[in-house]
Image (cartoon, rainbow, N blue to C red; front, side):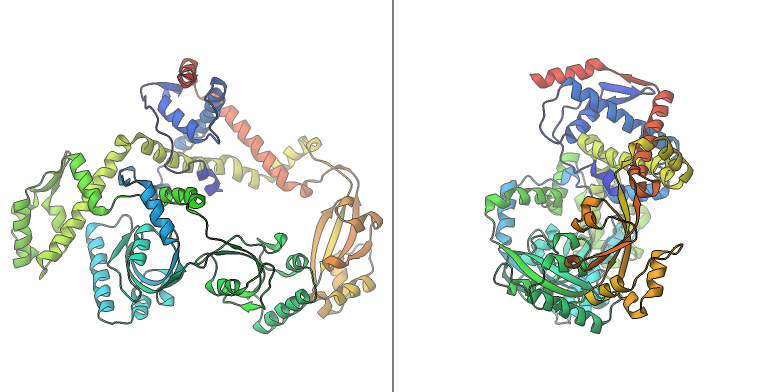
Length: 637
Protein backbone atom coordinates (compact mmCIF):
# COMPACT_ATOMS: atom_id res chain seq x y z
CA UNK A 1 0.00 0.00 0.00
CA UNK A 2 2.77 2.44 0.95
CA UNK A 3 4.46 1.69 -2.37
CA UNK A 4 1.26 2.54 -4.24
CA UNK A 5 0.99 5.88 -2.46
CA UNK A 6 4.58 6.70 -3.34
CA UNK A 7 4.06 5.82 -7.00
CA UNK A 8 2.38 9.20 -7.43
CA UNK A 9 5.69 10.81 -6.60
CA UNK A 10 7.53 9.43 -9.64
CA UNK A 11 11.12 10.25 -10.47
CA UNK A 12 13.03 13.49 -10.74
CA UNK A 13 12.07 14.04 -14.35
CA UNK A 14 9.35 16.68 -14.44
CA UNK A 15 9.43 19.35 -17.16
CA UNK A 16 11.16 22.64 -16.53
CA UNK A 17 8.74 25.23 -15.20
CA UNK A 18 8.67 28.97 -14.79
CA UNK A 19 8.84 29.37 -11.03
CA UNK A 20 6.72 32.21 -9.72
CA UNK A 21 6.79 31.56 -5.97
CA UNK A 22 5.08 34.85 -5.15
CA UNK A 23 1.91 33.86 -7.04
CA UNK A 24 -0.52 31.38 -5.45
CA UNK A 25 -3.44 29.50 -6.98
CA UNK A 26 -5.06 28.85 -3.60
CA UNK A 27 -4.65 29.23 0.15
CA UNK A 28 -5.58 26.92 3.00
CA UNK A 29 -5.91 28.80 6.31
CA UNK A 30 -3.75 31.52 4.75
CA UNK A 31 -0.98 29.12 3.68
CA UNK A 32 -0.40 29.50 -0.07
CA UNK A 33 -0.22 26.79 -2.73
CA UNK A 34 2.17 28.45 -5.14
CA UNK A 35 1.58 28.53 -8.87
CA UNK A 36 4.95 26.82 -9.36
CA UNK A 37 4.16 23.97 -6.97
CA UNK A 38 0.71 23.46 -8.49
CA UNK A 39 1.99 23.43 -12.08
CA UNK A 40 4.77 21.03 -11.12
CA UNK A 41 2.26 18.58 -9.62
CA UNK A 42 -0.28 19.08 -12.43
CA UNK A 43 2.16 18.48 -15.29
CA UNK A 44 3.81 15.55 -13.54
CA UNK A 45 0.52 13.72 -13.10
CA UNK A 46 -0.71 14.11 -16.66
CA UNK A 47 -0.82 10.74 -18.38
CA UNK A 48 -0.53 12.29 -21.83
CA UNK A 49 0.34 15.60 -23.44
CA UNK A 50 -3.19 17.00 -23.33
CA UNK A 51 -3.50 20.79 -23.64
CA UNK A 52 -3.75 22.76 -20.41
CA UNK A 53 -7.27 24.20 -20.25
CA UNK A 54 -9.13 25.92 -17.44
CA UNK A 55 -11.50 23.00 -16.74
CA UNK A 56 -8.68 20.51 -16.27
CA UNK A 57 -6.76 22.93 -14.05
CA UNK A 58 -9.84 23.56 -11.92
CA UNK A 59 -10.58 19.85 -11.57
CA UNK A 60 -6.99 19.02 -10.61
CA UNK A 61 -6.81 21.89 -8.11
CA UNK A 62 -9.87 20.48 -6.35
CA UNK A 63 -8.10 17.12 -6.02
CA UNK A 64 -4.85 18.80 -4.96
CA UNK A 65 -6.64 20.74 -2.21
CA UNK A 66 -8.07 17.44 -0.90
CA UNK A 67 -4.51 16.07 -0.82
CA UNK A 68 -3.23 19.16 1.02
CA UNK A 69 -6.07 19.00 3.56
CA UNK A 70 -5.12 15.41 4.41
CA UNK A 71 -1.47 16.39 4.80
CA UNK A 72 -2.49 19.29 7.04
CA UNK A 73 -4.49 16.88 9.21
CA UNK A 74 -1.39 14.67 9.44
CA UNK A 75 0.75 17.63 10.54
CA UNK A 76 -1.72 18.51 13.29
CA UNK A 77 -1.34 14.97 14.65
CA UNK A 78 2.45 15.26 14.70
CA UNK A 79 2.95 12.90 11.78
CA UNK A 80 6.11 13.93 10.00
CA UNK A 81 8.19 14.74 13.07
CA UNK A 82 8.59 11.38 14.81
CA UNK A 83 12.02 9.65 14.72
CA UNK A 84 10.54 6.63 12.88
CA UNK A 85 9.00 8.86 10.21
CA UNK A 86 12.18 10.89 9.72
CA UNK A 87 14.26 7.72 9.43
CA UNK A 88 11.98 6.39 6.70
CA UNK A 89 11.84 9.74 4.92
CA UNK A 90 15.62 10.11 4.97
CA UNK A 91 15.90 6.58 3.60
CA UNK A 92 13.75 7.55 0.61
CA UNK A 93 15.46 10.84 -0.16
CA UNK A 94 18.92 9.24 0.07
CA UNK A 95 17.97 7.33 -3.08
CA UNK A 96 16.92 10.40 -5.06
CA UNK A 97 19.41 11.46 -7.70
CA UNK A 98 20.80 14.82 -6.66
CA UNK A 99 20.38 17.44 -9.40
CA UNK A 100 23.95 18.69 -9.10
CA UNK A 101 25.27 15.23 -10.04
CA UNK A 102 24.08 15.50 -13.65
CA UNK A 103 26.80 14.80 -16.20
CA UNK A 104 26.88 17.18 -19.17
CA UNK A 105 28.26 14.36 -21.36
CA UNK A 106 25.75 13.68 -24.12
CA UNK A 107 23.23 10.95 -23.43
CA UNK A 108 23.93 9.54 -26.86
CA UNK A 109 27.48 8.52 -25.92
CA UNK A 110 26.15 6.75 -22.81
CA UNK A 111 23.50 4.96 -24.90
CA UNK A 112 26.17 3.73 -27.32
CA UNK A 113 28.32 2.54 -24.41
CA UNK A 114 25.45 0.50 -22.95
CA UNK A 115 24.48 -1.00 -26.31
CA UNK A 116 28.06 -2.08 -26.96
CA UNK A 117 28.36 -3.66 -23.52
CA UNK A 118 25.08 -5.53 -23.98
CA UNK A 119 26.91 -7.70 -26.54
CA UNK A 120 28.84 -9.31 -23.67
CA UNK A 121 28.26 -10.88 -20.26
CA UNK A 122 30.63 -10.86 -17.31
CA UNK A 123 31.01 -13.48 -14.60
CA UNK A 124 32.41 -11.81 -11.51
CA UNK A 125 32.84 -12.03 -7.75
CA UNK A 126 33.17 -9.10 -5.39
CA UNK A 127 33.89 -8.00 -1.86
CA UNK A 128 31.75 -5.18 -0.45
CA UNK A 129 32.61 -3.07 2.56
CA UNK A 130 29.48 -1.10 3.31
CA UNK A 131 29.25 2.60 4.08
CA UNK A 132 26.02 4.01 5.48
CA UNK A 133 24.69 7.19 3.91
CA UNK A 134 25.20 8.93 7.25
CA UNK A 135 28.74 7.64 7.86
CA UNK A 136 31.15 10.17 9.28
CA UNK A 137 34.48 10.79 7.50
CA UNK A 138 36.42 8.63 9.97
CA UNK A 139 34.18 5.62 9.30
CA UNK A 140 34.41 6.20 5.55
CA UNK A 141 38.20 6.31 5.70
CA UNK A 142 38.31 3.18 7.82
CA UNK A 143 36.16 1.38 5.24
CA UNK A 144 38.44 2.57 2.44
CA UNK A 145 41.55 1.43 4.30
CA UNK A 146 40.03 -2.01 4.96
CA UNK A 147 39.05 -2.37 1.29
CA UNK A 148 42.52 -1.32 0.19
CA UNK A 149 44.10 -3.89 2.52
CA UNK A 150 41.87 -6.68 1.15
CA UNK A 151 42.66 -5.67 -2.42
CA UNK A 152 46.38 -5.89 -1.72
CA UNK A 153 45.91 -9.38 -0.25
CA UNK A 154 44.00 -10.44 -3.39
CA UNK A 155 46.68 -8.97 -5.67
CA UNK A 156 49.31 -10.89 -3.71
CA UNK A 157 47.61 -14.21 -4.38
CA UNK A 158 45.19 -14.67 -1.47
CA UNK A 159 42.11 -16.80 -2.18
CA UNK A 160 39.50 -14.26 -3.30
CA UNK A 161 36.54 -16.48 -2.40
CA UNK A 162 37.89 -16.95 1.12
CA UNK A 163 38.48 -13.21 1.51
CA UNK A 164 34.89 -12.60 0.40
CA UNK A 165 33.43 -15.18 2.80
CA UNK A 166 35.30 -13.71 5.75
CA UNK A 167 34.97 -10.00 4.97
CA UNK A 168 32.31 -9.08 2.41
CA UNK A 169 29.24 -7.37 3.85
CA UNK A 170 26.93 -8.65 1.13
CA UNK A 171 24.58 -11.60 0.65
CA UNK A 172 26.97 -13.10 -1.89
CA UNK A 173 29.63 -13.60 0.81
CA UNK A 174 28.40 -17.13 1.58
CA UNK A 175 29.06 -17.98 -2.08
CA UNK A 176 32.57 -16.57 -2.01
CA UNK A 177 31.35 -13.26 -3.43
CA UNK A 178 30.12 -14.90 -6.64
CA UNK A 179 27.55 -12.86 -8.59
CA UNK A 180 27.28 -15.22 -11.56
CA UNK A 181 26.73 -13.88 -15.06
CA UNK A 182 25.36 -10.41 -15.73
CA UNK A 183 25.38 -7.82 -18.46
CA UNK A 184 25.08 -4.04 -18.83
CA UNK A 185 22.31 -2.28 -16.87
CA UNK A 186 22.17 -5.16 -14.35
CA UNK A 187 24.44 -3.49 -11.78
CA UNK A 188 24.93 0.06 -10.54
CA UNK A 189 27.04 2.04 -12.99
CA UNK A 190 30.33 2.33 -11.02
CA UNK A 191 30.27 -1.43 -10.43
CA UNK A 192 29.47 -2.14 -14.08
CA UNK A 193 32.41 0.04 -15.17
CA UNK A 194 34.76 -1.86 -12.88
CA UNK A 195 33.53 -5.23 -14.16
CA UNK A 196 33.77 -4.37 -17.85
CA UNK A 197 37.09 -2.54 -17.58
CA UNK A 198 38.88 -5.31 -15.63
CA UNK A 199 40.41 -8.17 -17.66
CA UNK A 200 39.48 -11.81 -17.04
CA UNK A 201 41.35 -13.07 -13.97
CA UNK A 202 42.10 -9.50 -12.86
CA UNK A 203 41.27 -7.58 -9.69
CA UNK A 204 39.62 -4.19 -10.17
CA UNK A 205 40.69 -0.96 -8.58
CA UNK A 206 38.58 0.09 -5.57
CA UNK A 207 35.06 0.95 -6.75
CA UNK A 208 32.81 3.34 -4.81
CA UNK A 209 29.04 2.94 -5.20
CA UNK A 210 26.08 4.02 -3.08
CA UNK A 211 26.47 0.75 -1.17
CA UNK A 212 30.10 1.24 -0.19
CA UNK A 213 33.52 0.13 -1.49
CA UNK A 214 33.88 -2.86 -3.82
CA UNK A 215 36.75 -4.85 -5.24
CA UNK A 216 35.83 -7.05 -8.18
CA UNK A 217 37.42 -10.21 -9.49
CA UNK A 218 36.42 -10.94 -13.10
CA UNK A 219 36.14 -14.71 -13.54
CA UNK A 220 35.12 -14.84 -17.20
CA UNK A 221 33.54 -12.97 -20.11
CA UNK A 222 31.47 -14.24 -23.02
CA UNK A 223 29.20 -13.07 -25.81
CA UNK A 224 25.65 -12.51 -24.61
CA UNK A 225 23.40 -15.51 -25.13
CA UNK A 226 20.35 -13.30 -25.45
CA UNK A 227 16.97 -13.69 -23.82
CA UNK A 228 14.57 -16.60 -23.91
CA UNK A 229 10.88 -16.83 -23.16
CA UNK A 230 9.97 -19.96 -21.22
CA UNK A 231 7.12 -21.57 -19.35
CA UNK A 232 7.60 -23.89 -16.41
CA UNK A 233 5.81 -26.20 -14.02
CA UNK A 234 7.38 -25.80 -10.60
CA UNK A 235 7.30 -27.87 -7.43
CA UNK A 236 8.71 -26.25 -4.32
CA UNK A 237 10.94 -28.07 -1.84
CA UNK A 238 9.05 -26.51 1.06
CA UNK A 239 7.12 -29.25 2.85
CA UNK A 240 8.07 -31.89 0.29
CA UNK A 241 10.65 -34.65 0.57
CA UNK A 242 13.21 -35.14 -2.18
CA UNK A 243 11.79 -38.57 -2.94
CA UNK A 244 8.18 -37.36 -3.26
CA UNK A 245 9.28 -34.35 -5.31
CA UNK A 246 11.26 -36.48 -7.75
CA UNK A 247 8.38 -38.92 -8.08
CA UNK A 248 5.72 -36.26 -8.65
CA UNK A 249 7.74 -34.22 -11.18
CA UNK A 250 8.46 -37.43 -13.13
CA UNK A 251 4.75 -38.28 -13.14
CA UNK A 252 3.90 -34.82 -14.50
CA UNK A 253 6.64 -35.04 -17.14
CA UNK A 254 5.42 -38.49 -18.24
CA UNK A 255 1.89 -37.09 -18.56
CA UNK A 256 3.19 -34.32 -20.84
CA UNK A 257 5.13 -36.82 -22.94
CA UNK A 258 1.96 -38.89 -23.31
CA UNK A 259 -0.04 -35.93 -24.65
CA UNK A 260 -1.26 -34.33 -21.43
CA UNK A 261 -2.44 -30.72 -21.70
CA UNK A 262 0.36 -28.41 -20.51
CA UNK A 263 -1.96 -25.66 -19.23
CA UNK A 264 -4.18 -28.03 -17.31
CA UNK A 265 -1.22 -29.81 -15.73
CA UNK A 266 0.30 -26.46 -14.82
CA UNK A 267 -2.96 -25.27 -13.28
CA UNK A 268 -3.24 -28.48 -11.28
CA UNK A 269 0.31 -28.98 -10.04
CA UNK A 270 2.56 -25.91 -10.18
CA UNK A 271 3.48 -24.21 -6.91
CA UNK A 272 4.22 -20.92 -8.72
CA UNK A 273 1.00 -19.04 -7.95
CA UNK A 274 2.08 -16.10 -10.13
CA UNK A 275 2.06 -18.21 -13.30
CA UNK A 276 -0.43 -20.95 -12.41
CA UNK A 277 -3.28 -19.54 -14.48
CA UNK A 278 -1.25 -18.51 -17.54
CA UNK A 279 0.32 -21.87 -18.29
CA UNK A 280 3.50 -21.17 -16.29
CA UNK A 281 4.51 -18.42 -18.71
CA UNK A 282 7.57 -16.38 -17.70
CA UNK A 283 8.71 -13.11 -19.32
CA UNK A 284 11.70 -12.89 -21.65
CA UNK A 285 14.75 -13.31 -19.41
CA UNK A 286 18.52 -13.38 -19.70
CA UNK A 287 21.54 -13.76 -17.44
CA UNK A 288 20.94 -12.57 -13.90
CA UNK A 289 17.15 -12.53 -14.30
CA UNK A 290 16.54 -16.24 -13.65
CA UNK A 291 18.71 -18.82 -11.82
CA UNK A 292 21.71 -19.74 -13.97
CA UNK A 293 20.96 -23.47 -13.79
CA UNK A 294 17.44 -22.78 -15.11
CA UNK A 295 18.74 -20.63 -17.98
CA UNK A 296 21.41 -23.16 -18.94
CA UNK A 297 18.67 -25.71 -19.59
CA UNK A 298 16.57 -23.15 -21.48
CA UNK A 299 19.53 -22.13 -23.65
CA UNK A 300 20.06 -25.81 -24.47
CA UNK A 301 16.59 -26.12 -26.03
CA UNK A 302 16.59 -25.47 -29.78
CA UNK A 303 12.99 -25.31 -30.96
CA UNK A 304 9.92 -23.44 -29.78
CA UNK A 305 7.67 -25.81 -27.81
CA UNK A 306 10.54 -28.15 -26.90
CA UNK A 307 10.34 -29.40 -23.30
CA UNK A 308 13.35 -30.36 -21.20
CA UNK A 309 13.38 -33.29 -18.75
CA UNK A 310 12.78 -32.32 -15.09
CA UNK A 311 15.44 -30.11 -13.49
CA UNK A 312 16.13 -30.04 -9.77
CA UNK A 313 17.46 -26.70 -8.49
CA UNK A 314 18.07 -25.30 -5.03
CA UNK A 315 14.49 -23.94 -5.12
CA UNK A 316 12.66 -27.09 -6.22
CA UNK A 317 11.84 -29.01 -9.39
CA UNK A 318 11.11 -27.48 -12.81
CA UNK A 319 9.81 -28.73 -16.12
CA UNK A 320 10.92 -26.10 -18.63
CA UNK A 321 9.40 -25.39 -22.03
CA UNK A 322 11.04 -23.07 -24.57
CA UNK A 323 8.48 -20.66 -26.03
CA UNK A 324 10.62 -18.19 -27.98
CA UNK A 325 14.15 -16.87 -28.46
CA UNK A 326 14.65 -13.12 -28.72
CA UNK A 327 17.00 -11.87 -31.40
CA UNK A 328 19.40 -9.15 -30.39
CA UNK A 329 17.35 -5.95 -30.64
CA UNK A 330 18.60 -3.11 -32.82
CA UNK A 331 19.97 0.06 -31.25
CA UNK A 332 16.84 1.97 -32.22
CA UNK A 333 14.58 -0.66 -30.62
CA UNK A 334 16.57 -0.56 -27.39
CA UNK A 335 17.17 3.19 -27.32
CA UNK A 336 14.05 4.14 -25.26
CA UNK A 337 14.75 1.46 -22.65
CA UNK A 338 18.44 2.36 -22.39
CA UNK A 339 17.63 6.06 -22.16
CA UNK A 340 15.14 5.46 -19.35
CA UNK A 341 17.65 3.28 -17.49
CA UNK A 342 20.32 5.97 -17.79
CA UNK A 343 18.03 8.51 -16.15
CA UNK A 344 16.81 6.14 -13.44
CA UNK A 345 20.18 4.62 -12.53
CA UNK A 346 22.25 7.79 -12.29
CA UNK A 347 24.55 6.58 -15.05
CA UNK A 348 24.75 10.19 -16.23
CA UNK A 349 26.16 11.42 -12.93
CA UNK A 350 29.46 13.21 -12.69
CA UNK A 351 32.51 11.37 -11.37
CA UNK A 352 33.50 12.37 -7.82
CA UNK A 353 36.57 14.32 -8.99
CA UNK A 354 34.71 16.27 -11.67
CA UNK A 355 31.83 16.92 -9.30
CA UNK A 356 34.08 18.36 -6.59
CA UNK A 357 35.80 20.68 -9.05
CA UNK A 358 32.42 21.82 -10.41
CA UNK A 359 31.06 22.58 -6.92
CA UNK A 360 34.26 24.34 -5.92
CA UNK A 361 33.95 26.63 -8.92
CA UNK A 362 30.23 27.30 -8.39
CA UNK A 363 30.51 28.01 -4.66
CA UNK A 364 33.73 30.06 -4.49
CA UNK A 365 36.09 27.55 -2.87
CA UNK A 366 39.04 29.23 -1.09
CA UNK A 367 41.98 27.64 0.71
CA UNK A 368 45.44 28.36 2.09
CA UNK A 369 47.08 25.45 0.24
CA UNK A 370 50.66 26.02 1.55
CA UNK A 371 49.33 25.82 5.14
CA UNK A 372 47.53 22.55 4.35
CA UNK A 373 50.63 21.07 2.70
CA UNK A 374 52.76 22.01 5.69
CA UNK A 375 50.21 20.59 8.14
CA UNK A 376 50.03 17.24 6.35
CA UNK A 377 53.83 17.06 6.23
CA UNK A 378 54.00 17.69 10.01
CA UNK A 379 51.34 15.03 10.78
CA UNK A 380 53.28 12.50 8.70
CA UNK A 381 56.51 13.46 10.45
CA UNK A 382 55.49 13.63 14.12
CA UNK A 383 51.99 12.12 14.28
CA UNK A 384 48.73 13.92 14.98
CA UNK A 385 48.93 13.67 18.81
CA UNK A 386 52.25 15.56 18.77
CA UNK A 387 51.00 18.38 16.54
CA UNK A 388 50.34 21.83 18.04
CA UNK A 389 46.57 21.40 17.66
CA UNK A 390 45.31 24.46 19.60
CA UNK A 391 47.12 26.72 17.16
CA UNK A 392 45.54 25.08 14.10
CA UNK A 393 42.18 23.70 15.21
CA UNK A 394 40.15 26.87 14.83
CA UNK A 395 41.78 27.95 11.59
CA UNK A 396 39.92 27.39 8.33
CA UNK A 397 41.08 24.42 6.28
CA UNK A 398 38.94 25.79 3.44
CA UNK A 399 35.97 28.02 2.79
CA UNK A 400 33.02 26.93 0.62
CA UNK A 401 30.45 29.65 -0.06
CA UNK A 402 29.85 31.38 3.26
CA UNK A 403 30.83 28.33 5.28
CA UNK A 404 34.20 27.99 7.01
CA UNK A 405 35.40 24.42 7.62
CA UNK A 406 37.88 24.34 10.55
CA UNK A 407 40.96 22.13 10.77
CA UNK A 408 39.46 20.55 13.90
CA UNK A 409 36.89 18.70 11.75
CA UNK A 410 39.62 17.19 9.63
CA UNK A 411 41.68 16.24 12.70
CA UNK A 412 38.64 14.52 14.26
CA UNK A 413 38.19 12.48 11.09
CA UNK A 414 41.75 11.14 11.36
CA UNK A 415 41.49 9.61 14.82
CA UNK A 416 44.98 8.96 16.23
CA UNK A 417 46.97 9.21 13.03
CA UNK A 418 50.41 7.89 13.93
CA UNK A 419 52.94 6.57 11.42
CA UNK A 420 50.87 7.49 8.38
CA UNK A 421 52.40 8.44 5.04
CA UNK A 422 51.84 11.80 3.34
CA UNK A 423 50.19 10.01 0.38
CA UNK A 424 47.68 8.30 2.67
CA UNK A 425 47.00 11.57 4.48
CA UNK A 426 46.31 13.30 1.17
CA UNK A 427 43.87 10.52 0.23
CA UNK A 428 42.12 10.99 3.54
CA UNK A 429 42.00 14.74 3.10
CA UNK A 430 40.51 14.43 -0.41
CA UNK A 431 37.74 12.18 0.94
CA UNK A 432 37.09 14.62 3.78
CA UNK A 433 37.05 17.59 1.41
CA UNK A 434 34.62 15.88 -0.98
CA UNK A 435 32.20 14.91 1.80
CA UNK A 436 32.18 18.42 3.25
CA UNK A 437 31.62 20.05 -0.14
CA UNK A 438 28.78 17.66 -1.01
CA UNK A 439 27.26 18.15 2.45
CA UNK A 440 27.30 21.89 1.83
CA UNK A 441 25.71 21.46 -1.60
CA UNK A 442 22.99 19.22 -0.15
CA UNK A 443 21.99 22.10 2.09
CA UNK A 444 21.81 24.49 -0.87
CA UNK A 445 20.12 22.12 -3.34
CA UNK A 446 16.47 22.88 -2.42
CA UNK A 447 17.11 26.60 -3.02
CA UNK A 448 19.24 26.17 -6.15
CA UNK A 449 16.99 23.57 -7.78
CA UNK A 450 13.28 24.33 -7.15
CA UNK A 451 12.03 21.12 -8.79
CA UNK A 452 14.26 19.14 -6.44
CA UNK A 453 12.70 20.99 -3.49
CA UNK A 454 9.25 20.09 -4.78
CA UNK A 455 10.31 16.46 -5.12
CA UNK A 456 11.57 16.31 -1.53
CA UNK A 457 8.28 17.83 -0.37
CA UNK A 458 6.35 15.27 -2.43
CA UNK A 459 8.11 12.40 -0.70
CA UNK A 460 7.54 13.92 2.71
CA UNK A 461 3.88 14.65 2.09
CA UNK A 462 3.37 11.31 0.35
CA UNK A 463 4.58 9.44 3.44
CA UNK A 464 2.43 11.67 5.67
CA UNK A 465 -0.55 10.96 3.42
CA UNK A 466 -0.02 7.22 3.80
CA UNK A 467 0.06 7.39 7.59
CA UNK A 468 -3.00 9.63 7.92
CA UNK A 469 -4.98 7.53 5.41
CA UNK A 470 -4.02 4.43 7.37
CA UNK A 471 -5.28 6.02 10.57
CA UNK A 472 -8.42 7.75 9.30
CA UNK A 473 -9.60 5.39 6.56
CA UNK A 474 -7.90 2.03 5.99
CA UNK A 475 -7.51 0.82 9.57
CA UNK A 476 -10.93 2.15 10.55
CA UNK A 477 -12.58 0.13 7.82
CA UNK A 478 -10.68 -3.02 8.82
CA UNK A 479 -11.19 -2.69 12.58
CA UNK A 480 -14.74 -1.32 12.68
CA UNK A 481 -16.78 -4.48 11.99
CA UNK A 482 -19.96 -2.85 13.35
CA UNK A 483 -19.52 0.17 11.07
CA UNK A 484 -18.84 -2.09 8.10
CA UNK A 485 -22.00 -4.11 8.75
CA UNK A 486 -24.06 -0.94 9.20
CA UNK A 487 -22.69 0.46 5.91
CA UNK A 488 -23.55 -2.78 4.12
CA UNK A 489 -27.09 -2.86 5.55
CA UNK A 490 -27.63 0.73 4.40
CA UNK A 491 -26.37 0.00 0.89
CA UNK A 492 -27.55 -3.56 0.22
CA UNK A 493 -29.22 -2.53 -3.02
CA UNK A 494 -25.74 -1.91 -4.50
CA UNK A 495 -24.85 -5.58 -4.13
CA UNK A 496 -27.44 -7.44 -6.19
CA UNK A 497 -26.65 -11.06 -6.93
CA UNK A 498 -27.71 -13.61 -9.56
CA UNK A 499 -28.67 -17.16 -8.65
CA UNK A 500 -25.54 -18.97 -7.53
CA UNK A 501 -24.39 -22.06 -5.73
CA UNK A 502 -22.16 -22.73 -2.75
CA UNK A 503 -19.86 -25.46 -4.07
CA UNK A 504 -17.14 -27.68 -2.61
CA UNK A 505 -14.27 -28.29 -5.05
CA UNK A 506 -12.25 -31.50 -4.54
CA UNK A 507 -8.98 -31.98 -6.45
CA UNK A 508 -6.45 -34.81 -6.65
CA UNK A 509 -3.55 -35.76 -8.87
CA UNK A 510 -4.84 -39.33 -8.79
CA UNK A 511 -8.17 -39.74 -10.60
CA UNK A 512 -8.87 -42.94 -8.63
CA UNK A 513 -9.20 -40.83 -5.47
CA UNK A 514 -11.86 -38.71 -7.19
CA UNK A 515 -13.71 -41.85 -8.31
CA UNK A 516 -13.83 -42.95 -4.67
CA UNK A 517 -15.30 -39.58 -3.67
CA UNK A 518 -18.05 -39.95 -6.30
CA UNK A 519 -18.85 -43.54 -5.38
CA UNK A 520 -18.55 -43.31 -1.60
CA UNK A 521 -19.75 -39.93 -0.39
CA UNK A 522 -23.33 -39.57 0.88
CA UNK A 523 -24.75 -36.26 2.11
CA UNK A 524 -25.71 -36.17 5.78
CA UNK A 525 -27.99 -33.74 7.56
CA UNK A 526 -26.60 -31.27 10.11
CA UNK A 527 -23.00 -32.20 9.38
CA UNK A 528 -20.28 -30.22 7.61
CA UNK A 529 -19.31 -31.48 4.17
CA UNK A 530 -15.57 -31.62 4.95
CA UNK A 531 -15.92 -33.55 8.22
CA UNK A 532 -18.40 -35.96 6.62
CA UNK A 533 -16.08 -36.53 3.66
CA UNK A 534 -13.23 -37.31 6.04
CA UNK A 535 -15.37 -39.77 7.96
CA UNK A 536 -16.53 -41.63 4.85
CA UNK A 537 -13.17 -41.97 3.04
CA UNK A 538 -10.07 -43.98 3.84
CA UNK A 539 -7.45 -41.76 5.57
CA UNK A 540 -4.87 -42.12 2.77
CA UNK A 541 -7.47 -41.11 0.18
CA UNK A 542 -8.69 -38.08 2.17
CA UNK A 543 -5.13 -36.85 2.83
CA UNK A 544 -4.43 -36.85 -0.93
CA UNK A 545 -7.30 -34.42 -1.64
CA UNK A 546 -7.30 -30.63 -1.99
CA UNK A 547 -10.62 -29.23 -0.75
CA UNK A 548 -11.92 -25.66 -1.08
CA UNK A 549 -15.31 -23.95 -0.91
CA UNK A 550 -16.29 -21.52 -3.68
CA UNK A 551 -19.31 -19.73 -5.13
CA UNK A 552 -20.25 -20.33 -8.78
CA UNK A 553 -22.94 -19.21 -11.18
CA UNK A 554 -24.74 -21.71 -13.41
CA UNK A 555 -22.85 -20.43 -16.49
CA UNK A 556 -19.38 -20.85 -15.00
CA UNK A 557 -19.03 -24.50 -16.11
CA UNK A 558 -20.85 -26.50 -18.78
CA UNK A 559 -21.61 -29.32 -16.34
CA UNK A 560 -23.38 -27.00 -13.91
CA UNK A 561 -26.40 -26.60 -16.22
CA UNK A 562 -27.41 -30.28 -16.01
CA UNK A 563 -26.36 -30.77 -12.37
CA UNK A 564 -27.77 -27.55 -10.91
CA UNK A 565 -29.30 -29.05 -7.76
CA UNK A 566 -28.42 -29.09 -4.07
CA UNK A 567 -26.46 -32.11 -2.76
CA UNK A 568 -25.26 -33.09 -6.23
CA UNK A 569 -21.76 -34.43 -6.97
CA UNK A 570 -20.29 -34.53 -10.45
CA UNK A 571 -16.82 -34.67 -12.00
CA UNK A 572 -14.89 -32.46 -14.36
CA UNK A 573 -12.45 -35.04 -15.80
CA UNK A 574 -10.34 -32.60 -17.84
CA UNK A 575 -9.55 -30.73 -14.62
CA UNK A 576 -9.31 -33.79 -12.31
CA UNK A 577 -11.92 -32.24 -10.03
CA UNK A 578 -15.16 -33.16 -8.33
CA UNK A 579 -17.77 -30.50 -7.64
CA UNK A 580 -20.23 -30.90 -4.75
CA UNK A 581 -23.15 -28.43 -4.79
CA UNK A 582 -24.07 -27.81 -1.19
CA UNK A 583 -26.65 -25.01 -1.56
CA UNK A 584 -28.43 -23.11 -4.32
CA UNK A 585 -28.63 -19.46 -3.30
CA UNK A 586 -31.54 -17.65 -4.99
CA UNK A 587 -30.93 -14.39 -6.83
CA UNK A 588 -31.44 -11.24 -4.84
CA UNK A 589 -28.78 -9.63 -2.69
CA UNK A 590 -25.31 -10.85 -1.84
CA UNK A 591 -24.58 -11.70 1.76
CA UNK A 592 -21.86 -9.62 3.39
CA UNK A 593 -19.41 -12.53 3.61
CA UNK A 594 -19.72 -13.08 -0.16
CA UNK A 595 -18.73 -9.54 -1.14
CA UNK A 596 -16.81 -8.43 1.92
CA UNK A 597 -13.80 -7.27 -0.13
CA UNK A 598 -15.93 -5.02 -2.34
CA UNK A 599 -17.93 -3.72 0.62
CA UNK A 600 -14.69 -2.99 2.47
CA UNK A 601 -13.40 -0.95 -0.49
CA UNK A 602 -16.70 0.94 -0.77
CA UNK A 603 -16.73 1.59 2.98
CA UNK A 604 -13.21 2.99 2.81
CA UNK A 605 -14.26 5.32 -0.04
CA UNK A 606 -17.26 6.46 2.00
CA UNK A 607 -15.13 7.09 5.09
CA UNK A 608 -12.69 9.12 3.01
CA UNK A 609 -15.45 11.25 1.46
CA UNK A 610 -17.03 11.93 4.87
CA UNK A 611 -13.63 12.82 6.31
CA UNK A 612 -12.93 15.23 3.43
CA UNK A 613 -16.32 16.90 3.92
CA UNK A 614 -15.38 17.53 7.57
CA UNK A 615 -11.92 18.84 6.60
CA UNK A 616 -13.40 21.26 4.08
CA UNK A 617 -15.84 22.56 6.71
CA UNK A 618 -13.15 23.16 9.36
CA UNK A 619 -10.48 24.74 7.12
CA UNK A 620 -10.66 28.03 5.22
CA UNK A 621 -10.03 27.52 1.50
CA UNK A 622 -9.48 30.37 -0.95
CA UNK A 623 -9.04 29.82 -4.71
CA UNK A 624 -7.72 32.45 -7.09
CA UNK A 625 -9.55 31.67 -10.32
CA UNK A 626 -7.76 34.54 -12.06
CA UNK A 627 -4.43 32.74 -11.71
CA UNK A 628 -5.94 29.53 -13.14
CA UNK A 629 -7.33 31.51 -16.08
CA UNK A 630 -3.94 33.13 -16.60
CA UNK A 631 -2.20 29.71 -16.68
CA UNK A 632 -4.70 28.48 -19.28
CA UNK A 633 -4.31 31.68 -21.28
CA UNK A 634 -0.49 31.46 -21.23
CA UNK A 635 -0.72 27.89 -22.52
CA UNK A 636 -2.66 28.99 -25.62
CA UNK A 637 0.05 31.43 -26.71
